[in-house]
Amino acid sequence: MDTNRGELEFGIAQKIYFIRGKKVMLDSDLAELYQVPVKRLNEQVRRNIDRFPADFAFQVTETEWEILRSQIATLNNGGRGEHRKYLPYVFTEQGVAMLSGVLHSPRAIQVNLEIMRTFVKLRTLIESNRELSLKIEQLEQKYDADFKVVFDALRELMMSPTEPPKITGLGQD
Image (cartoon, rainbow, N blue to C red; front, side, top):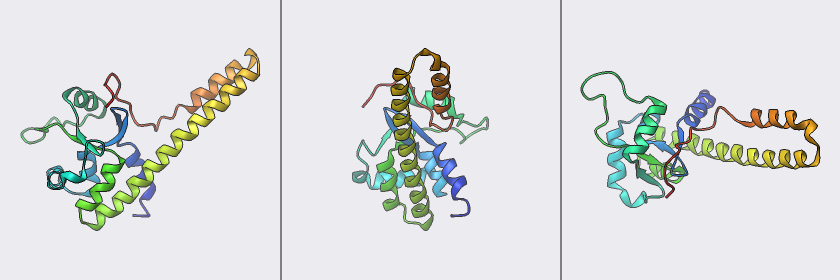
């Protein structure tokens, strides 16, 4: 796991989305990482439903799924059995942590550790970006308009292309 850790971390970060104001991962992405069928993952969740309250895992709405699908192109152009019959479930950081308790494999434990590390790094990155934004605003207020170009350039650089896509136009929980 350590040799591919950077690649796995990057792959995980690309699979974190914002839905209903929460950072979540799709059941299909998690199943792929755990190397189990989506059906098996969701089956284990249903069997242990008390471990997955609504703030840990929830099923997306049709609208949320259409927006997500258009962003990540999840459907293949194949035939029978290639399309989802049901709306996917998504898991918050706490829901992902709970998955390690219901998926009993060494792979699940290792993947969960990497996912938790990625969530922590993402949270740290977002927080450091906020702090940097505040410092730039303070500097901008302190100095005159001659530095506007510099401050605008700094803001542009701060917009990270590695931020998870945001699902907009959806209500908050």
